[in-house]
Image: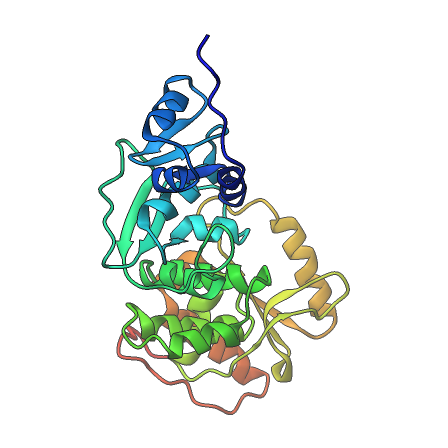
Length: 311
């Protein structure tokens, strides 16, 4: 009878910290021989995740996270959507981004595998080592379009995983970050209360570009309601509907709320996605017309893209 290979206590301790994943070097340092490692693999007690990286008690997503970090070497960290999942912001992704120091080699990978490696020195934290929320969000924004940037910033802030101030501090320390200027603009809008990409577009492309006053975001003006943009001084509300297709659902409720606000002396303007995205200049002109009838003395500013002038 072949004796059962026992796992040294020191290796079990290391494995417990690393979600049940160890490296060949750790196994040898703990006292196992190369033949003992092969025996554990042949017996099915261990699973090979990559060359020299093993799971000693089953394989799941957590084990793949740690395997990626161990493949990357000291200083490596989980990033991208996987780090966002660790922060509780998104569902579990199929791919696992790993940031690893530039002097590390990734030749131990077996294919196919879930890891996407990036070279660079980052600031890992926690277990498994991963990027912090602020670094993760800015990385995701750097690879996103304007609406994606707004969505990531709004998600992180509204879910209270970070603050606009902390994001702004890190952004200030990242002069070479891709999309930096656009991220700063979107962050300003989100910090002001914009909760969706459409709201950010309205703030940027309608209000700011055309010299309109900045309304108060997410303001309750009647019991049980929360309006997207409220121009309190001028008794005007702007509601933004981000649905790009059929809009019938909820329209009865919206009409009832608008009538309630009208009874309070508040007029409501409603704009959809296509209005703000494709006709922002016309939307600005319409808002300016209404605000003027209710006391606004400002001047509408025409942006370089304005196809029409206010009538």
